[in-house]
Image 1: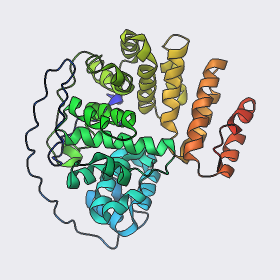
Image 2: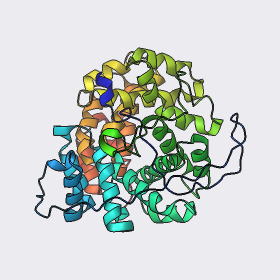
Image 3: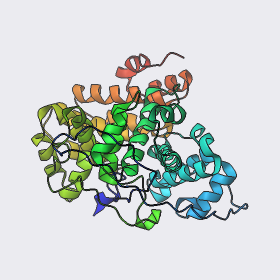
Image 4: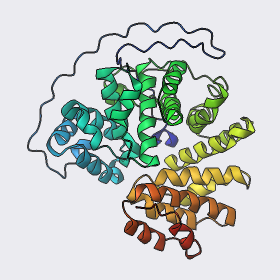
Length: 388
């Protein structure tokens, strides 16, 4: 099935034991009183990997060979590793999982210095890997202090969100996939709880942070917070969490409906109206993951949704998934140019210009980017430039 190539629906991973879960005294809404979590099983220290000092900077083995990847991180550092994995995407597909492993290795090698080299390439896989490794070693006795160390305060909103989202992934795995415990742990953060919630819900669907049998060396894990109801667990969590749940729920619907986007769109319309925007944005991301590099196909699939805000959300969910780092800027602009109606163009360009403000390095880069936009939107684009 083609849709299984999506980075959002690859597998369920097993949670790695990361220390004793902090006990949260609140009761779960609709779930009964919380019982203390059992002590996690001990974690064996990973065997020191051999380092191939002859590994070359242009190595291709690092995408699929963990020993080669470890050697590359050791020899060239995390930043260069992520750059190389990103270069190899056209050959091997999505690099998120490889970047995740690289992040884990970098923390093992460089400790907290690894946090200085994480970046948005490979859909922020290095964020997730370093955070997982940190929690594995230190637990979460003081989440607020952990936050200061892991997520730098000088990052722009996009990078900050990715880091906080990664913490949500880590908390979900660390809590043995106890969804309600992980959400309550996010609530203890001094900032960024909503980004953390999004990581919890994504981890509940994909199980991606903790690894899986083929790549992670762990037995498969299946969360108990999924069932045959396409609205669950979004229908069971408190209202404040629901929008963030629906932001990843269509990846679960992909599994339930065998990748039938017509059924997924119908299920989104069955959600409470105030969560339609989140659900259709999620659908757009999943459409993009299936038809990456084929914007005409993405637009055709999103167009099964009736004209209006829901269809526009599908378009914007798709286009922003293409634009995570500078190399995605031309693809994103070309996507917008293929749309026909003003409301669609307005929504698409607003999304792309906002993302460019966060991922382009300088005012000069942004000016060049704006010059490539549709002439009718170039002045709008320039208005998004972040003051340096």
